[in-house]
Image 1 (cartoon, rainbow, N blue to C red):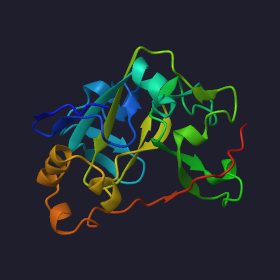
Image 2: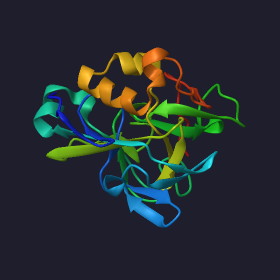
Image 3: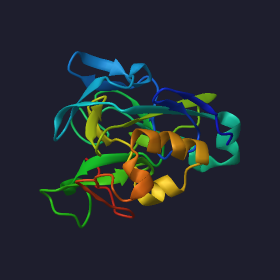
Length: 211
């Protein structure tokens, strides 16, 4: 995909970051729900573990139907209401296939029931009729948020993660994108592992136990 070389303050348009929330989804803020495409750097978001946190960067990218045909793995995952449980999500939610969702351990085979784990949306596809790959859109616009630390926040009532600038994630970015990131977080240039790690375990290849 083509990298969109556009940087406006802390808002970066790109196609090269991991994950993303598809436009139209509502993020929980102290003033009520706000569509993710309307969130701006500095806006306060209600987070699961640390209360109100200001957004530091907002990134966007788009994927076309032609790109999804060429690479089916780019197609978003649609989660219908109650796909993961009561009010989870409250209404249809589309996520990039590699965007991670916080799932209760009792819904994951082999995990402790009283814990929660991060799992990529693609691993939920097919677990039930309420979670599937959606290639119907001509253009899919994805947005991701970055905070001062990794956060879990609700989108359409479902807890999802913010972007995590791990050393591996930073190393995979284009020069322009990496430069924008380290301008906001200069410690990443000196120490690639300095961004606070996720508080929740990320798991792959586990069986999701549907309702």
